[in-house]
Image (cartoon, rainbow, N blue to C red; front, side, top):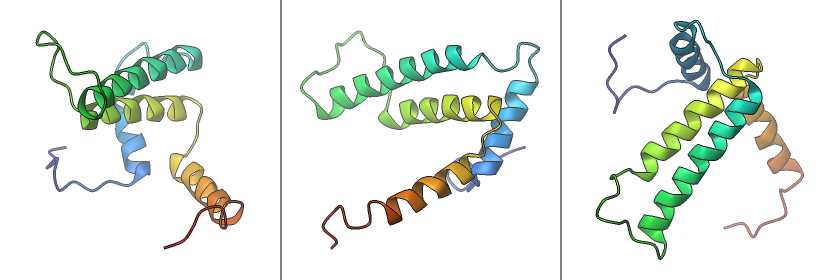
Length: 113
């Protein structure tokens, strides 16, 4: 597939398809929705830890592995895509619905610039 990580712009559909192709090569396939929810919780905890290290009051121990917020967000996104794929959810459509909701229901909620 050969991709340039910095210049490879993909649609959400393409990313979901790439994740599906990766998972489909294994007999085990996708984990159950409950197992993936547990994975999401784990990954969210790892993201929270990184954010706390970089922006909060809890510096890393010298023995702790150097992760980045970007890496942890990527891990979280991967698991979200796995969950969506396993439930046949199109994340582009989900995004469009959420943006419609925010642009209608919440359009006057915040102070506009």
